[in-house]
Length: 379
Ligand SMILES: Cc1cc2nc3c(=O)[nH]c(=O)nc-3n(C[C@H](O)[C@H](O)[C@H](O)COP(=O)(O)O)c2cc1C
Image 1 (cartoon, protein in one colour):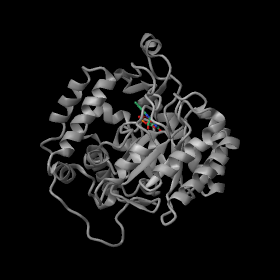
Image 2 (cartoon, helix red, strand yellow; image 1 turned 90 degrees about the horizontal axis):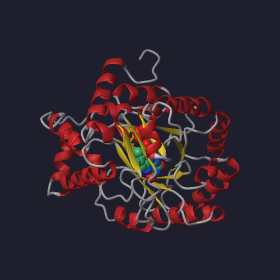
Image 3 (tube, rainbow, N blue to C red; image 1 turned 45 degrees about the horizontal axis):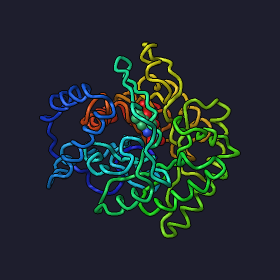
Image 4 (cartoon, rainbow, N blue to C red; image 1 turned 90 degrees about the vertical axis):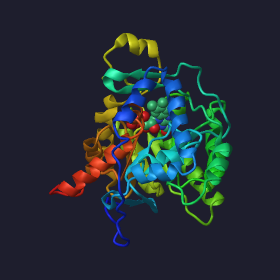
């Protein structure tokens, strides 16, 4: 599950352009910063979709920015990833732009969180910037069009398509004692459309959701989702992962890790956002933002700690997907060296602009060529 060129197949060498890098990208990011955060997200995402929607647009973007260095390729979860860095869940909740987003340089895209029933999420404002700390606080509350709509959209995509994972959560209106059935409904709906499925029990913005991380609740939930995926997709085993919060106590992280191995789960995503505000210095802005999950740079240290702990408990028996505060090629390197096979980010994409995934993966490839694979003792 390490990075590197597969034994077979010629390496793809393509001409790359740096013309569009930095200048246009950073101007766009600066302009979007003038808008309220959720509006900026809507406009920025719309522009990405428009660029991908013009005839030949995705081909051009892919040619310029998609990862093509054989050193970056990853084989994991039975899938081929052109690069280890993916877009984390939450940016493209309803799968409207996965192809264009991958063409910008992400090695894969996780869409969702979707829920069994469509829901509006929390009232706005529900996303807040902390630019000095390169952090965000959000309490979106799983605003989404529902698992059925997402599934239909993904199934309509032309092949070949990028690796697309689907992240599922609990419908807010469903009582906690019906949570398993609600996840099972979503799993049935998305099984055919997803390259892998993630059970999200770690977002802080759906009341009671994070209580499902307790192993006595998590075990039956994961068993039921596994069965639903197998039933809905009898010919292809859909990989199943669970996404955990950085706020779990260390014993609870261990318990999830052991249970995941025991159940034959395919992987763990560590981590979601945190309810902590450690690292945010403007206490008035923190109070104004109110409740929600914090992401970005202040999450980096804890997310790395959780990853290291998981790796110490599970070794290579699970695919570990690192998320939380990844901003630079060095951050990517550190997570891979700590045992991650794949990486995800969201907040750095917001702060650093649309060409950020391309830049980080290009820099990571250069470092691998210079220093060897992350995790190698001589690297
Ligand atoms: C605005 C926003 C919305 C998010 N929505 C979701 C979501 O729907 N499901 C989910 O699993 N994670 C969601 N996340 C968490 C991210 O997927 C990621 O785990 C977290 O932000 C840490 O990564 P980062 O520091 O690179 O942003 C969201 C994050 C942000 C900033």
